[in-house]
Length: 263
Ligand SMILES: Nc1ncnc2c1ncn2[C@@H]1O[C@H](COP(=O)(O)OP(=O)(O)OP(=O)(O)O)[C@@H](O)[C@H]1O
Ligand SMILES: [Mg+2]
Image (cartoon, rainbow, N blue to C red; front, side):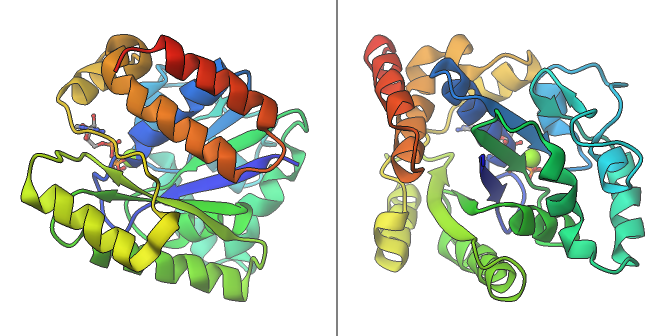
């Protein structure tokens, strides 16, 4: 069974999509078979991976029962587009609406070791579907004032999903993203998260840089565009692998990537 990670946050622009894209890259470079799923009608992850805009079937077709998850995989990803907003509305009126993604993912080929799901910037039905389909939740926070509040709200939804629908769900970790540790507010955000969530906060903090927007625009991985910054995500991939059982060999490979990447 693949480890299935839902990447979520209470608000928009906390670097979820970038984290999904770059973690998927780092894991794949460590020979971990990784499927990325775009569950956001904005389709940013699909753009970032440079899939053709008209690629079909998409996650909407999968959720609506028009295609299987296996049919929707292109280049190790399942794409999304704006039609997902309509599908979300349609799902809202269905019995078992929270379980739709979980059921749909049952036919994902068994050789994937990790599945990473990029959630939309709200804690609504799509995010709940991701949390019910997942066994781990990764919560991202922008290193700003109120970071703690946002993470607490996301954690409430994680706990709700676990208590009502998915007892296997647990937290993978809390990621402080878009950080500038020279500033007081980034440092305070980290301190408050550590006070509240302790070791569940990843040691790796993702530095903020305009290079991320540039690399997204060019649909290039930050690992290639700016390997010095990409080193953050290689370190994060190492921590993620430490928290996922059964991937020890990949941990060694990611450590080798870390040694060869400039900081
Ligand atoms: N470490 C970073 N430093 C600076 N900018 C970043 C960083 N990571 C991502 N960005 C940029 O911030 C913006 C938001 O990032 P991203 O799309 O990954 O966030 P998101 O949480 O997925 O947003 P949404 O909630 O809208 O889905 C993008 O322009 C992205 O290129
Ligand atoms: Mg996004």
